[in-house]
Image 1 (cartoon, rainbow, N blue to C red):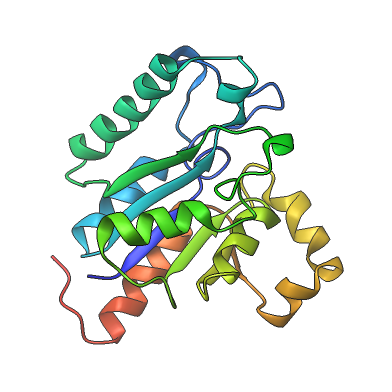
Image 2 (cartoon, rainbow, N blue to C red):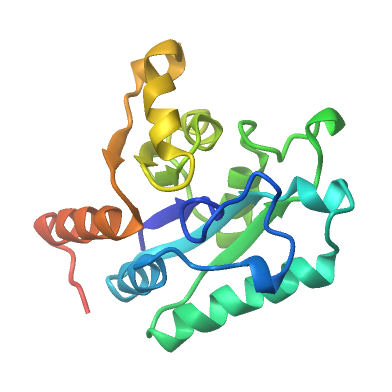
Length: 192
């Protein structure tokens, strides 16, 4: 079963420079929930890898994050899909952990938990750090223009790692899902 890894804020839900701190502030982007469900129904394992330094900064607590995660899981299930897992880094940039993207620790945790290899798996993000984490594990970088994606797209030419592995670029997660499902179908996999 192929794996696709998604960033959360700016890809699945609206982002904010002040952080998404509560369920009341968590709003899915148009078409994102349906896109996740379509990927799941097409045979992809869909995992989320998200930096959540608001935890480490004391802006919200684990109960707040779990409420947002639960809502995301419920919305995807309501559309007939399933998330393989939501993996998050609670640390701040100064903690120098291995799980905060652009370091690939979250992706390693996904691979270990799901028992999969990461090589070639799409990693979808709206920031260069999302893509850099994927490239560090030989994943396939995909940039969306939602969230911070348009700004990130203008920064691509200054990033040697991303120039060596140029990402595919789509307007949003729904367009990514269309592309990946069509690609899976062309490669002869069955789609339910």
